[in-house]
Image (cartoon, one colour):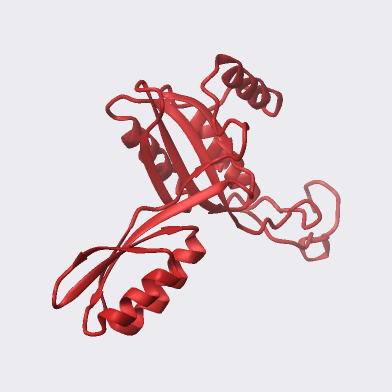
Length: 225
């Protein structure tokens, strides 16, 4: 006598199509959305104290964010420093970078800059000086300046947007590049717009926005990425 619950045989049961996650749960293809990575600049105002950069870099390492460059330096206030981060992530990843930075105690405020923000990078390019006249002409073309020269080499300082720096490096390569050192991007918002305001109101607004987009206590798990 056959026992058990009624119903179709295993090979007659419907099998939903679609990709499954690591737990075997089917992912609805209509719900799953593909976000293309994009490059953006995030500015963080932090307390100027030992260990802040270590905290920030450790956060990136744990979360495996795709960081293109990270620069840090003092501001007009001796108690504060500004960290400028260039990331290339999908929009959910960029949102997570901002949210996780705001959770760090030394961080005062965080902001993603507009595409028209002033972005600059500095590069030192050391080339062979076999053709000094041509090296000087290329330097003039990029509004660069020679900061060191010898019979064998010339070192050129170039500042500007990332695209300008890369174009200059490509052009100087015709002379034979010996060494390159680049700072990474630093940036400020245009006009009177605050890059990353140091006011308590700005911090409160950012915290309120995070709470409005998240219901429940935060715990650091793999699904937060």
